[in-house]
Image 1 (spheres, rainbow, N blue to C red):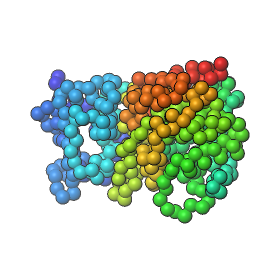
Image 2: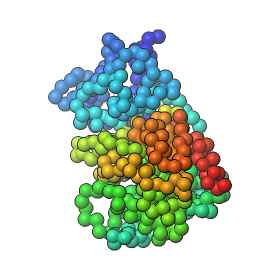
Image 3: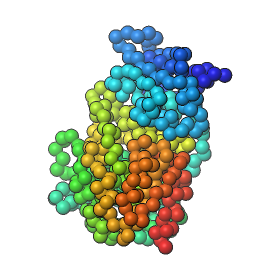
Image 4: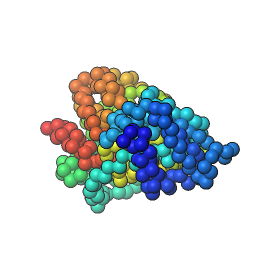
Length: 402
């Protein structure tokens, strides 16, 4: 069977799945899949031919490249629509940017279901969590009612969530009995995120996060709630601020565990993250779904994206003002005293936002820093596959305990 015939068969199966059908609602679209010189059209919506109400998007590559998409597991930059669009020059994607943004959730669902592979997962014991609210006042006088959760007992570990998300991302790690026997894992939802409402002085304007504000909330939480230095464990933008904490407030940091730490992740913001003609929940969830590893369990990948679908309008976009436009990992890394603050950088191979090369460059500027590569995982390892993440994470904590 040719690659073209295989792709057509896989597409037919993917189109019949419940989530692909769900994400097709409201779309009027024709997608042209080109394999070498052979073409297969897929029509979405009530119209089967182009008209003034329909758009056309094309995805073309050689048969050899499409074969890699259909492989299990697909290699990095072949594993999702967004990875192909943003990082794979061997594919050509055509179409109006607005139409692509409106259909991104559908495209990511299609690519996630081209090579379905079910991995059995075990439910996390969420009864281990203890949650409450705290009234926090920052050094600038801002007041927030911050929701936090914790599990385990021992020296504190501060779990810092990614842009646009919340502490639920860390549940699979926080509730691990082995870690909890030696460590107290604490996470909080930043204001505007998850179960933390906006600060009381918010007047309804657009949300934009900057490094100083982010640092202020983290320092205030450590000082007013935890009350002692922490192991700062963050992912993505949370990894970035963990490193900022080590550089700016080393008195509050015992160690840094940076998951998917960025160097200079420019270009992650785009005009359609907050746009009146694009479903923000669907688009944000799809935009991050493309960063997940294809070997992570399908149900956990859906949950990782689902957290993003619940974010308030503009919050993910506003966080990326810090993560994608302001943050400079080199400037921060050069200021961390790695002799007194151990730094571990854990990086997934399927992450095209913070890359393996980023992690090694950052480690080169921090004395004694170490890089731990995770070939199976993507940008949200603690959420997309916590069992696999813990395989890499437990030895890091064991070394800190020693």
